[in-house]
Image 1 (cartoon, rainbow, N blue to C red):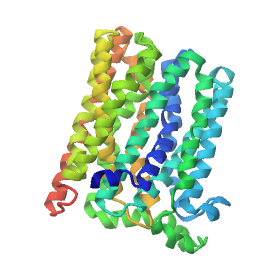
Image 2: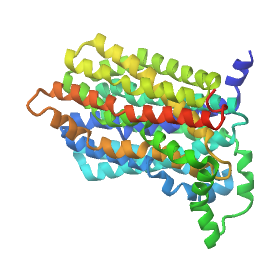
Image 3: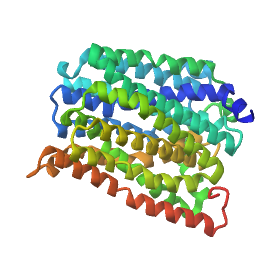
Length: 435
């Protein structure tokens, strides 16, 4: 009964909706976009390079200090610092997605890519503020774990829409109409933002207007990083290294997943149906398992488990490339991958949330999430070239199989770093994060 009351609290419901809003643009400027581009006749190498529009997610720490210390124009005074920036970013995302639906790849790839980059930039800005809001409204570690799970659940629900249902819709009405609908769905985030309460822990920062003195600018830009290294001491670099490699396998595989389905002969309808049924169930179970594990065993132990199952799940797609377009193998691979991604994603979000310092929440979390994605975002741009190189002297499917195996192997360094992280916490007697 207590768990039911916790799940039905207003801020948890709002977190679900904001998680949905945060996740909505992610695939639309990433993997799903690759499906559209491949069907439009764009080469694998070009698709890989165009995935670099997602670098905005990894560079958001550059403007996070501004978001942390300065109100959004006009809306900041009306809604508060966090909610004001949420509305600005959500409106920009909606406009960019609708713009993409009008231009289309055939209408001018440069302009189309520019709109995708705008959507990614606004989406990264939304992530900065939503992450800060989630952390600042958390009352305890259990509360943070619950909100992290709610965020992941909402995020995964949006991935269901943009990575599964959109394929079924696109098969019927086309990609352009589908992207217009996705732009309209940003209304979910807008409604949640207006219903949300500005975090009380951010009120002190709201009272004093930001002063553009040299000291104030230094504190806004350097303060969060100095505080982070002071708080975590000798473990700081180890934490950043582990975070930066944790989801590298998923990032490298991402841009080639949908082109792989198109090349192997699995239809959009089949991909969407599997993702929207057993794939969804597997994601929800994975998220729930990750949240329960974090509450019961701690963020570090959960992180370690995710470092094993996350990269290993990529091997299922290698098997699919070898076997051929088997619906049974595809479904099994999707179940394993979605469970592993849900579990590992919840583990990482919860752990990174536990590392931040109030007063610098947005910037520090942006730093961590940027480190988590930066290397993967850069390297995934070469994913198309990798598949093409692996395919030289072999069939395209053999090239895909070797590519997926290589993405699983790059998860080994992250696993080793997580083991070192567990030992470092134990060596200083910090059991809260380990147990």
